Image (cartoon, rainbow over all chains, first blue to last red; front, side, top):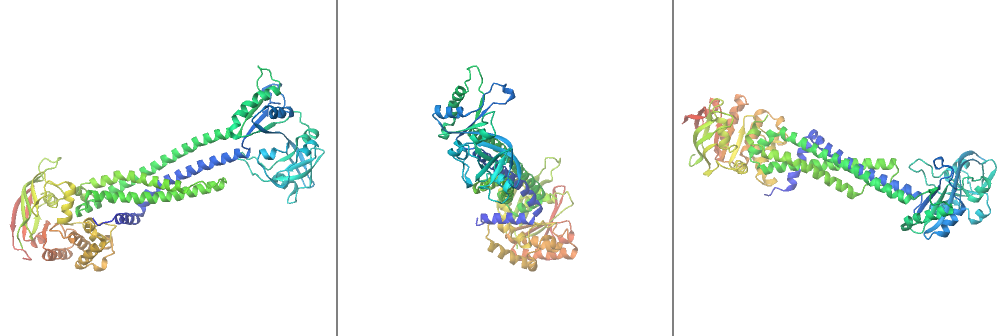
Length: 404
Length: 233
């Protein structure tokens, strides 16, 4: 046989082009299936990496401790988080590197140019280290500012825009509450919005001592950010911190903890687990749609065999062997499945890109994924093209010829 | 132009499971190489079934059939396809061209199945298409051709594989008298130039006039088999 494979494919392509309606119908199912598959893979990985980024904003190697002060469900017995807790943690733990307290309340904030009620945070210089948050201009306040209760502030870009417009805020003054003038010494780089919609750049940082002296903190600190020496020590640090905190709060054995503790890394782990399950689910659904696409190929090919029964009879009468007829229909299934899958890759890529842009996710579809989806789609199509091809090959020539 | 038996069918019976009486009942037929035979009879006489068996489209229930000296009565579908490809050409009443193929593609189809390469296929087909007078219609689709032209394409296709036996089932049945006569002329010309054996199924006495020999069937049996003066003797 000198007849080459390329000629078989060429004939299949010609048949596909000459019967555009049938061709498009056959391709459509697979194109949608492969497209959905790719879109789901991309959404899954995109959403997951986006979730991971959100947790990284909160700092890696960090454990958060919250007080239960003011929580009604806890009764009135909870003690506030204080500098004594900070000292106890730093002194008694082997695993903790830094502890940064934070108190945050909404205050009225004014500048010469505007007024903006917003959250003001009293904290320590290491805040920007734990949160891995660089400065855009100026600098963070230092230990001296903390000791001297300096009237200084570091602000986020949203605050800078709201209160100073396009002017350079560094060196300018804002007034917090009724009468606390603060000199701005730095602006933090923008971190944008969290998935929750919270604007990370709507932030004013002042020394915790200044906050305590002029704004007051009857409830103590809201939160202690605890940075451990190594990511691997996170669990140990959390176990270690509980008795230290209990001692520091002088809790009796029968009393419950009056603080709560969690780490973004742990939450991230959970989120990763959940999103892996969700991604798997999405891909499962997409695989079903791919399967449905394959069944679509089979149905159209079966209809096509029925429609072309007489043609098969003619070919058979002329002398085409059952194998040659089967190869013809299989080749058509290959061509249609391959083209349909390619179209699906295009669709999936488009959907992935559009969604990634809308959600500001990073690029998510690898060439390998796309090639894999195309190959998978093609094999599904060919597998489902086998039955119709076999049916065509098994037609009796006289019956097929008589078919109108 | 006779010599050896190309068709030697003996005691052919064909029964179908859902029918009480056999469609062919002990039919024997011997056709010499180069003969032109008309197979005649009313509808239901079994002549189409006989043609299917002689054309290796179907096998007999009983009886033996040897084609060109080779026993073909008990072949598998695949072997029958091979015999059709290399020994037999078909011409049908309703042409049976492949609708989405051009004239050239239709004529080259048997050669494609025979495994010839493209150049050889097209060279052979072009010569034949010229011969049947459609050299200017190579790229046309069947729908763009008249009935007579379609049948010429079908005849070119039937002989492109250089068959020994050409079976024509009512070849003029869908054509007017003049076109029908032209088609018969073409078949006879090809018979003369290509050493073909022709079996023509027809109930048109005018067509039968062209043939060396007429075989009549009724109710699955041959009721007469004889030569008569042929118009083209």
